[in-house]
Length: 152
Image (cartoon, rainbow, N blue to C red; front, side, top):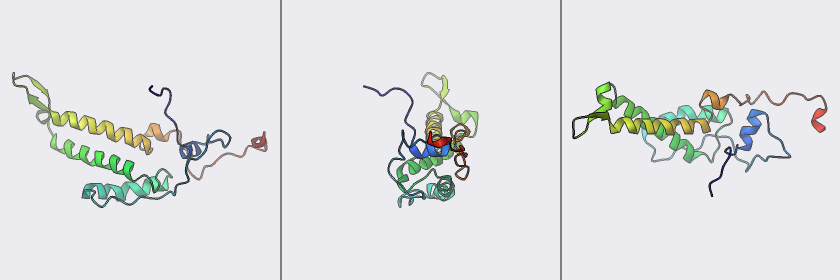
C-alpha cells in the first residue's frame, strides 16, 4: 500500500527550521557535516560543480559525509541539463518533423525538461530553492530565549 500524507522531514532540517522537539523527534543517525569525497569516475564538469556547491551546502549544514550519492545525482543531472540546453539554442533545435511532416518537440527538448525536473527536485532536498529555504533558520540564529517557559 502506498504511503500517503506529507513526506517525512529530517531531524536536522527541523533544527534549522527551529521546530525540533526532543520529545517528538530525533536527529536520526549522527552524521558529520562535511563535503563527501567526489567519486573518482565523476566527469570533470561534475567535479567542478562539486568543488563549488559542496562547501556551500556543508557550511549551511545541509551536507554530510554520507550524502555522496544524492549530491552526485543532483550535480550529474544539472551538468547534463546544461549540456542539453546548450544544444537547444534556437526554436528550430527544439522541434523535429514526424514521418508525416508535422512539427513536434524534439527528443532533446523532452530530455532537457526531464533533467530540469530532476535538478529542481534534488535542489529542494539540498535547500537550493527559495521555497525550500524559506522555513530554514540561519545556523547562528538558534532558538529565541523563552524566558523560563521552555520547561513547561
